[in-house]
Image (cartoon, rainbow, N blue to C red):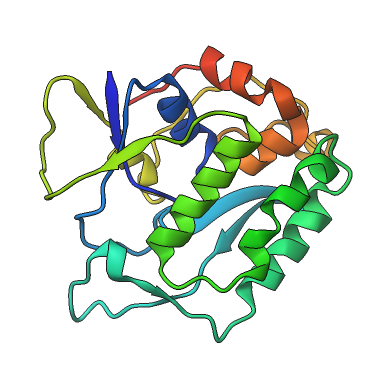
Length: 207
């Protein structure tokens, strides 16, 4: 089956389960931007529990705007802040040092649009997993999908997030707050390293 989903910021585990298991990845690029979604947000496991990292955007609700056109507000040093948060949260994880150099360009090069930046985060994670990053983009927005396509676009919705029951894996602060499921793919990558692909392939999604 093919899967249709939104390109999100360092996608959560559910997004990557869908992508790894798909015959073809199709990214929705013809939709209007919506606030408070994973389009510009990712969740990590910090010292005080779950923490959201948000990309600041230039956006007004008065005029509808296509997601692909939404610009990043680079007047804020958000990349530096996000990197510092990741270092604080994961520097003691088993594979942080192994992968962080490969991901560093995302935090040191200026990004223009949210969608392009998100596609780059996806591309670099696929490279870390040594998997080909092959995808297509939608040419027009369709509310319904064809029978051979799984519509995974709802996975980007933070406010009505679909609960996922993923198998626990060791996390840096799980002795304080227990296992936190469906965080950013970075949480899985930094903790599980080369085992990430096998983990993703063994999980099942709820829709």
